[in-house]
Image (cartoon, rainbow, N blue to C red):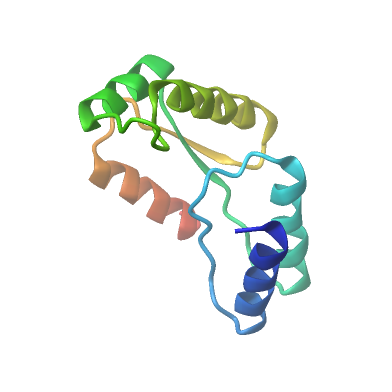
Length: 119
């Protein structure tokens, strides 16, 4: 999806007072900063959450799930995504970082809910 379409969808949702969860790996600071700008325009709150674990853990999890040849999660792409997320977490002080290394899915979920609930 191109950026113009994404921006239009976000703007439309915020105008209609809907919450938005962006379920993508967004690395570009310009795009991330746009989300904050448009949220401010509509009085919305941005919750930037980064799920993180050490590279070895991420690679092991992906390997256990299985690789698809030429798919989104090849070993090379998975490593590249990890590198970008690791860099992002160092450069986004406003982000909530959840280290998932020793957490089960329900524990990660509870931490996300806690952040969204302002607890």
